[in-house]
Length: 104
Image 1 (cartoon, rainbow, N blue to C red):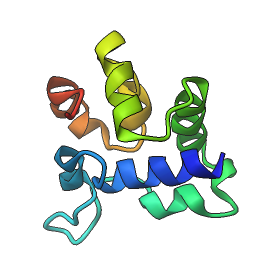
Image 2: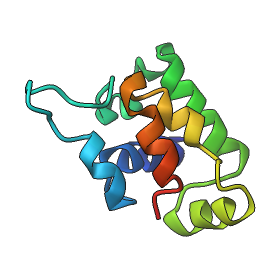
Image 3: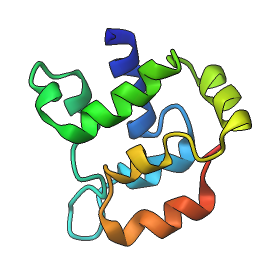
Image 4: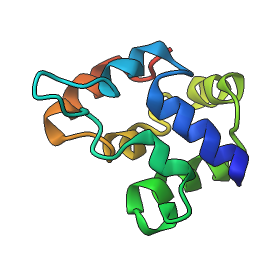
């Protein structure tokens, strides 16, 4: 479970797929685009946040803890993780992410 949480954190930070990095940067108002900091994935209170549970459960259901394994899943289902990732973003970003998904 810890491996999945760390993988999800790195995914949200944009370290796994650089196309996602722009959503972890601060915007002009000095605010992150992501609604919650990726570091929350690995905090003891993380299970209290539904968006953490959604992304963790999806990754766990497929046993995904690596970039290659996630890419394999996207070959089967290109929309895998999209709705879970969108839960981390303001609605104004949803259509932009949908167009570029999967972010490989």
